[in-house]
Image 1 (cartoon, rainbow, N blue to C red):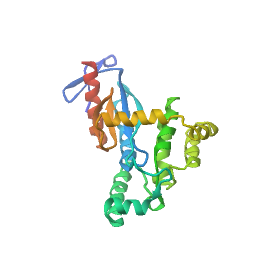
Image 2 (cartoon, rainbow, N blue to C red):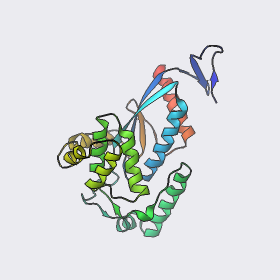
Image 3 (cartoon, rainbow, N blue to C red):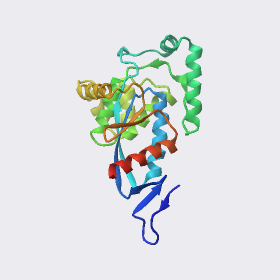
Image 4 (cartoon, helix red, strand yellow):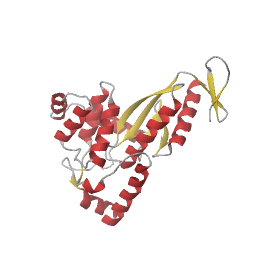
Length: 238
């Protein structure tokens, strides 16, 4: 719960859990994520709520950074059932894990349709698309579009035509996307960011950073995300 530190005029500070936060603090948030990480979609929705909760006295910019859950994945991807069965020991175990994340997602208004998902894709091109959108400062819509395309619609986000559809729906020019994907553009930048994740010892996603420093990992509850962001804002102003 928040309490104004003064009355009458708009408060200059807010107090929560014994800490004081100034108005107009700004956080540079980075989310290290993979486009086929189901918990990353859940975390994105929860982070959206946490950022809304700290506004307007704390504002945040969010940049999405790449991670590969399956760095050895062939360019064309693989059959999801065969891959997940081998990875988790059985298809039944894979389905149990799918059910777990689907149940969590429902609490945040997300609908996972795992039965529609036929392939586990290579995500390098998806990360290149996110990088491209970052050049115009509009990653949020394309990240949301990738998660929805894969987890809700069951589309193969390793397919360049699908990526062009997602990017175009997020406001990008389709021809520009296809030209980028047909070239080497963005490869070096994505690889550099993947290496940065290694140097930060990121071993799981999502991992959330503030001002380049890891803050928390996982799809933790929105109130816990909010508390961590407020704490980071307090440290930034101290």
